Amino acid sequence: MAERTFRDGVRAMAPLVVAVLGFAISFGVLARAAGFGWLAPIVMSATTFAGSAQFAAVSVLGDGGTVAAAVAAALLLNARYGPIGISVARWLTGGAWSRFLHAQLVVDESWAIAAEGEGRFNRGVLLGAGLVLYLAWVAGTAIGAILGEAFGDPSALGLDAAFAALFLGLLVPIAKDRRHVAAALLGAGIALVLTPFTPAGVPIVAASAACLLGLRR
Amino acid sequence: MIDVWTVVGLVGAGTIAIKAAGPVLLGGRPLPPRLGGVIELLAPALLGALVAVQTFQDGERLVLDERVLGVAAAAVAIRLKAPLLVVVVVAAATTALARAVT
Image (tube, chains in turn brown, purple):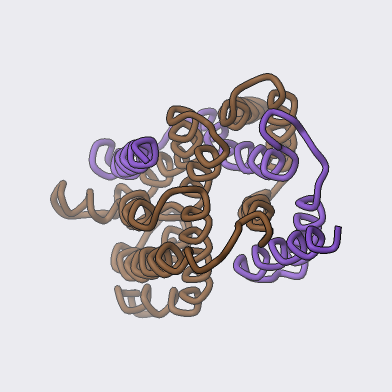
């Protein structure tokens, strides 16, 4: 089999572009509805480039949570990019600046497509897939954030339920085994118990303690 | 609005640093397996919490309202392997419809 290249990464990601665009448009619309204006969601997609963390930050702040709670929830969700980055580190050759830029394009989908088994990763595929995802993510956010004003009252449109549905849609594919399901249920339980007693956002951050289930083998 | 830009700035800078840390600093050294197991469960724990809070929270109270119907409809859509955009639209439309009826 010939070695895969940048173009293979682009081609592998192409069928996903419509889905990513839709996801990004919903981020733009929901961020706008949560009081983020039109520019901040676009800047956030261009710099953070990680869907679930962006939605988490917007929903915590939109619910009246503090800046610290919103930032903590988002960065805890992105903590997985620490080990993911380490797993590809050997395959990102080139200078420090080039490795830095490549690392920004490593998200769940591009990482999965660039995997070649036995811990090997293809740098060209990673770059191609990552760039396609990045462009679709930023463009979709811009469409949603700019046109978001055209949607009326967020509550009458059921947009508040859209957040919960979206997080459920992100959770189900990663709840691969019993440990993941247990962590999700424990996280939900911690958050619900704390909600009446703590400021908005704190229950979400506290729920991260459920990951300590990972200490049990 | 200042809060919005602070969050955008801090989350952006933090995420860029997390993504870059491995490739720029560490090279190919693997994480201790126990730490890896804990980090792996962070995302499901937080997403579970976000689903629960977004479904039941109203200010500092827990309530049962039309959102539950929307999330239930979303769960069916996820079960049917619908794309994420469809899942979100189904949830919003179901909730909006229930609000319009009641």
